[in-house]
Length: 400
Image (cartoon, rainbow, N blue to C red):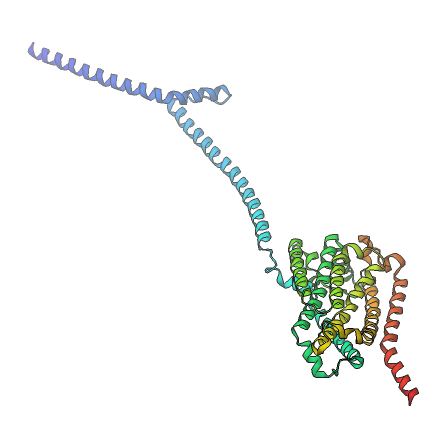
């Protein structure tokens, strides 16, 4: 009996322990069910959408994990990829804007100095300096020969005059006038598209094998090719005109100072206001170059007579006639030559000028008429160049 009581208590204790274990397992199962309830809800919603329902909780949980993982992966990859594409596009746009900003910031007169200097046509400077020296020579040789001032013209006097500070400023003013005329012409031609059309026409003719003479290359037109921004060229022009006006204050003589002012005004007005007018553009351009010896010669005569005791330029009055006659003959000779050259250049630019609506002589009257006019001015150049010396020889032969 005692044994049965002990076994009964033992069984009772075992049953209690098993019941406690069962209760603990039930609590664990309830907790797991609570944890799994969202998954079952998701599974039921998926089934409501038409997807097959899993048969066991384990299969349902596994399928939910896989499906939720794949959904999360898709959600994390696809938006990221889309954001990556958008970020790439944004980065490209930012890079373009940054490049444009850097180009705008880097495009300064200093950074574009080499193409800007090419725009001034340095190849013209030796000719301008030669005209400067020639004008000084003609003015002093003719003016001092009949001057009341006791000064004779010699080579040493010529060199001393050219090395003077005032004449150096005159040389600089003449060079700046030539440079500004070239740059302002390129500026307005590039803005109107004339140079771009001329370059395109030449390139097409060259590629098609038609040949023809190349008037200028892309290196001569950096504004048309985009090597120099328009705003930089405009700023460079303001610097050139400022330097020219500064030199003007030191140019000696009223006549030479007036010619510098006239030349500066012509360079500023030429392309925008004078170039569209037939004949006037050629006359103004040829006259601008031809006046260079007159400016230098009148300034040199003023300096020499003042230093020799002319006093405030009074000595210029006694020698103005012979000096001006010699200078104006030289001016007319140069004018005829450059007038012929200008018309020939218009013939070369015929296509671009016609498309841009610039009514040059060949555009308005035809190429044949323009070449005949150019030949006439060339003949006038030859007559004026040899006419003076020939008349001198005839006079000397008749006197003998």
